[in-house]
Image (tube, rainbow, N blue to C red):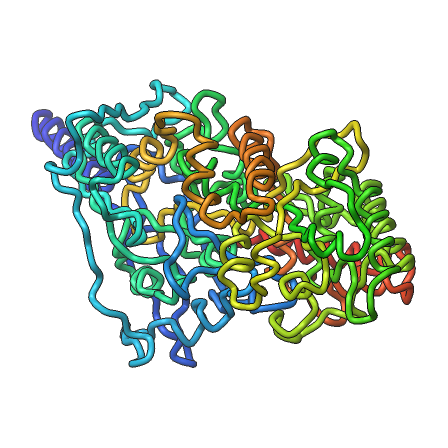
Length: 605
């Protein structure tokens, strides 16, 4: 009987080993979202993103309750013009500018979600996806040699892999970036793809789709159905990213312990912090696109020297800029002199979009919302923010500028924001991208203004300051991994190599930027000086001296603390500027409400 007891014990041990082995190889099952009582999908992704290489015990799978409802509808601010990630813009009428903002109707809403049966309505159906694999014949060229960056082995990142065992990684790519294999940048990209495939034993395929701001929500519907059509998903600016984040459609990239998001060597730009929510990263940005694409989202001062001369202003503003004397005090001096000599239908500056107010904040090194990557907070009580608002109020009282009495709901084409384009105002603060899509091709600009406009840096607070490059951060896009993608650490390893690579270019990158984005829009009157301004701005980006702004977050909170007509910050700013509300009482009435709204903004995704 002793031998029988020994055999029984041995058999029990074997059974336990087999059970443990079976348990270790079992991944949590995926489940499709199920429609609720109103036949809308509960966007609750399951813990399907498991991997053999990462301890999944720290899984914080989102349990989303919101939906991408397109909250960021068109308002009078003209700020949420979206530039697609990866240095891409949609063609034709799908390009967005201050004049052509994407309205809430183009964003994914509850009505666009698939039902429990995964059916889509006739109006929301899209054509079959177009995939574009980069063939081995086009991945390299005889004169192109690119080596994918690899990160050294680091025990802090156990999720990093070196062999994907032939896995296909589908990267979302807009059509205008996926074509023309003879283009030099495309050649470099294809060579990089070939090297990454060899280094990590994977197969990269481009899933060719525009971002959703171009009106295509195919990818969202596939994620809601539990079967993403791509592994890497373009987030075309804040409007797309926040809709997807709020709906819980994006994976927390930090939890995979795959890459060092804050490493100093070969880093992403600080723009990656735009996608740091509640201490976790939800997207990567594209290092190779920063100098070109992101510079177009920076603020400049457009002006009309011919109109200034017509009313007695003969100072050379370009010379003032070069001598370091282009300050806000000089701007105010010129505006006041101009307004004293012009008819009632003209003014030096109409700030109907509050871009001038924002420019005062940015050039003073602050913003009305500050984000530390964990919890954003209302910054109205900051000394520098109050300095900016005080100057704004004084200028309104002294007839230096004109502002509306309240946040306007009138179409931006019909309000006085566009007085500059009509030749009725000599100054306008806007993005560099507005040169093409607001000024030269917007349709509202007179030929006389096109022939005479100039571009200046934003004025300085004092002569000893440096000129600034401030980017309205809602413009910046990134790349995420949607829920439903398994072994996301493998995808993230490939993303690290693909997006953190700063492709070397022949010649001066600033000169290339000017040739590709600026030169064709310059006029004979001021073109060379405007070119010098943009070159100066661009070099700030090349040297990493640009700053990103966070006021855009106020448009995504509940309640909307940016443009709400009753208690939004813009409403209070205009009341303060017009003298109908005291700054102190406004700040005391909104600070707690705004901070609670911003705290909830990051919670529970």
